[in-house]
Length: 92
Ligand code: FES
Image 1 (cartoon, helix red, strand yellow):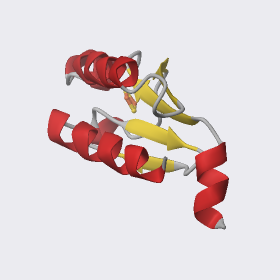
Image 2: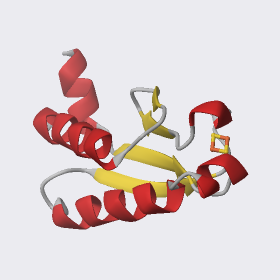
Image 3: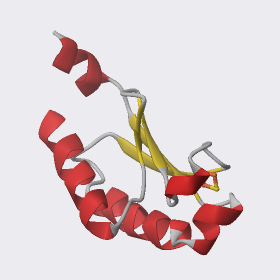
């Protein structure tokens, strides 16, 4: 039942691209990579990738937040992005 709840909702990934720490540590690169994944999964996965202001995890930049799970990922790299996308895809 818990999984059905997530399946019904749009998953939103907020990527900190505007905070100065994430901006300096590849936040934009992470955003661009996730946007490509969003485009590739269009129609298969209810996913939206959005830019965000500072998420409050500046010491662990770049940071992203995934909703509705309210999960924050810190020191994100492309490998982590792919793992997150794979996990989200598996919910669908
Ligand atoms: S600058 Fe990105 S979390 Fe603060």
